[in-house]
Amino acid sequence: MKQENSIQNKKILPEARPLTSVDVVIFTVLDDRLNVLLVIRPNTTEEPFAGMQALPGGFVNVESDADLESCALRKLHQKTGVKTPYLEQVGSWGGKARDPRGWSATHVYFSLIPPPDRLGEGAVWLPIGEHGIKTRLAFDHNVLLEAALQRLRSKVEYTSLPAFLLPDEFTLSELQQMYEVILERPLEKSAFRTRVFAADLVKPVNKIRTGNNRPAQLYRLKHPRKAVFFPRTFSPRKSD
Amino acid sequence: MKQENSIQNKKILPEARPLTSVDVVIFTVLDDRLNVLLVIRPNTTEEPFAGMQALPGGFVNVESDADLESCALRKLHQKTGVKTPYLEQVGSWGGKARDPRGWSATHVYFSLIPPPDRLGEGAVWLPIGEHGIKTRLAFDHNVLLEAALQRLRSKVEYTSLPAFLLPDEFTLSELQQMYEVILERPLEKSAFRTRVFAADLVKPVNKIRTGNNRPAQLYRLKHPRKAVFFPRTFSPRKSD
DNA sequence: CTAAGTTAGTTGCACAGTAGCACTAATTAA
DNA sequence: TTAATTAGTGCTACTGTGCAACTAACTTAG
Image (cartoon, rainbow over all chains, first blue to last red; front, side, top):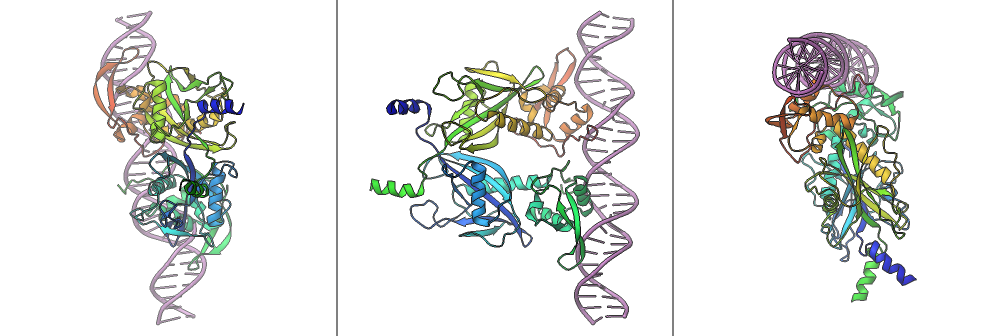
């Protein structure tokens, strides 16, 4: 009976299965620069890419992880303490060549969070320069990071994603600042505000004072966890 | 030595690995309707969802598949005979609940092809109605299909994707027709043409005659395998 | 206390893309 | 010969944004 089962399974289920992991590309803005969270891989000879920097992530645990997204949330929470981030899947990469230990597939998520108070073990922020990431990362993580960055930059053109980089309450200038940091170009103040209000993205709260103490209206997102889509992109009319 | 290795691996590599598969959502336009390719699952009691309709796909073969994309291409070629389709990843779905045989993860691709001459074994076209797909598919394939459909519809607003549903040479009216079938709404002829030319999407070839025999300019894509992005979406100004 | 500087937020004009619609030209069907 | 059909063009109005000047509220230097 048991043998019969195993013979049947041989026919139907694959004997060899890929290694399956989840990697998370976590962005925040520090000091007017976009940053990615990286971790240092343990320095043991049994592990590939020992001591190198890598995206936070690791193998899926089929016992404890109910699904891919909760696996990603778990890893993100471990490193940042953040429990309710903006989290979106970028895609998956799989093949025989990307991990020396065998055929592997990884599921990549990207996340936007406000700067957390402190980071988990071995986690560091890497600022992203104007000319991309020059640091050499473990595995094909440079490719994954580049893909996440591209996704972020393109969605920033027509969504409210940068709002997730800020605390709950923020001024419109701060929000515009987030857009400008990610897109690495200045935006029109007037058109920016028109867009934000037309999309019904925010609602006002009270008053405060920003950096050098000018009074400014504080706003909150109307739908705290949801990305809002603008009808059009910021037009690159002049910049070409 | 061998034992030592296996002990080490126990610590580092996961004992249990998810089942890993690739599913492909293949679209074409037949008779002014968007269609998806489905396959009938074998009617054996050893297989889950026996006899039901499902997306074409299956387990990754770690021996023969170099990576996920070539696995998707292989499956697509098997069912349609098409070798150079437009193919794009939609995302991945994984969890303990989606396959009765255990924790599984699937990598979903979507593809656009012109109507092929004939289909592979057990493959059929399902027309997509105005109100989505009512057929109940195997596994969570309704979710995967819905996601692919949503991706297609949103990208059609600002890319040249529908051109991949046509043969190499086509008229602008035929191209506009593809857009209208997918978006399920009429587009402005004048604005459509302006957009297509402004994006430098096509180049003219010779003359032919279309359906009811009116003369029409034939065009080819300038870059046959590449999706072109329009600067803006078709604006829904009046349609709201 | 005053003047200069900084930043939030507004206003007005010009321009580009396209929605909406009318029009021409080439062909087929009656 | 006339009506119908469809490819392709031309014109106007409207909308969002680029651009730039402006006001108002506050801080800082002297």
